[in-house]
Image 1 (cartoon, chains in turn purple, green):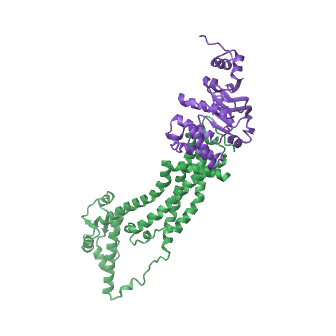
Image 2 (cartoon, helix red, strand yellow):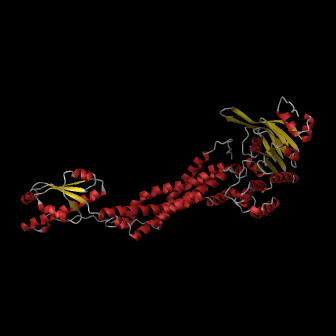
Image 3 (tube, chains in turn yellow, purple):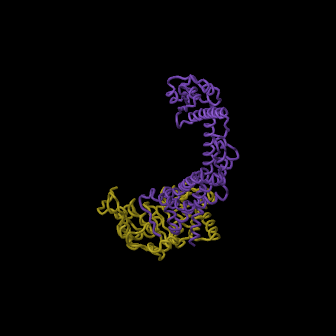
Length: 250
Length: 325
């Protein structure tokens, strides 16, 4: 369960002055649901997710993950979520297995549980071939799988994915999409950000459209379609984010 | 729980450090090789230079003294110098290092000696130049010998006892134990080397564990794990401290070893005539241990300082990462 309550983040920028990266965003994401944060580059998706993962502190407002406040108890929040973003790299000098083990231990798993977990995850993500290979020798897809194994090792109830398929080939991207769907089936709360419309159509139960740090629209795909009278998601997205909308002439 | 997390972070950083070639070189190789190479190189160069200077017969000139052939003849016979014919530009020849020294015999030296009138014999040298000083001291030692012969002759002529001019001898005798002599000499050097090595050993790990983590993009990964910021920093600090201490320890041990080897090989004997101070430059196990103990607080200070400084490097990225809790 994720509840964002008037989440705001402001930065001081030398040239632009005060920047409202995230402005008064509130939403709820329930277990067994995938919440898709849809927005252009710089819309505030990453900042929102980073605040949820307690990497950034909100300027105002707060959020609760499984009932834990992100400002009051960041360590409890981190224990209950798996965070994956384009900025969460792997330790190049550790092997894939050591990488996952390290995060399992930091999450307080004992050796027996950890071993069982790792065997299970490595089997499911088909990672046994490069188990003992150093992370700097892995391909992009292998790295992404290792990162996922890392976020999964402590079996968190909440998963936060920031553009998880960015820069991946179709086959690896499909594995990731498949995996996110599996998280939902296991009753996890999943939030993920993207600017790829197809992923939203394939996966999301609820979509939040974010632009300029503000949550402009929210609802199921069906609700959004009805509200804006559009069947094409891309058209719909453009309609939401541009105030003076002019339909594309075909 | 707290100790467990610090230990987990420490173990992981240790695994990574041991796989990093640069850390291995700065932590293990540099301190192990620095002292042997430095001391071997230093003694080799020094003994070569001094040995060569001692073997070479310095060229000297005798100025004046044509009316005193005895002293001139004596100097020419003296095996430790080579007398060359005098020229007028002897001063510039000394400066140009054509000759190493010159000795000026005053006019009527021998005649005045017979009359018992004191004379000054001047030795010209280029102070600070090793070979010139050696030449001058060789001339001086001959002249002193010559003076003593004359004095003895005079005493004999007057039927006086030989020890008239030297009623007693003065001699210095060292009673300090050899380790103390060595300690006084080494004390200064070791302190500086240990300070330098503590800093040097911790430098690369400190940068690698903080700025390196940002650079490789793993900072956000580790911050998304439940480990508390304090435990994370403590684990990293302990690793930098370990590297710093290992470096300092290896340095002291290798220093002790190289001095023992040097002493056994008698390389240093060439340098000192008596071979006294050199052959006693030893570091016992107790000395090595106490130097190491004294290095600990220093290493702690340096490790903390290095981590702090390195954390500021590259910290102004797009978003600043929080450090709360």
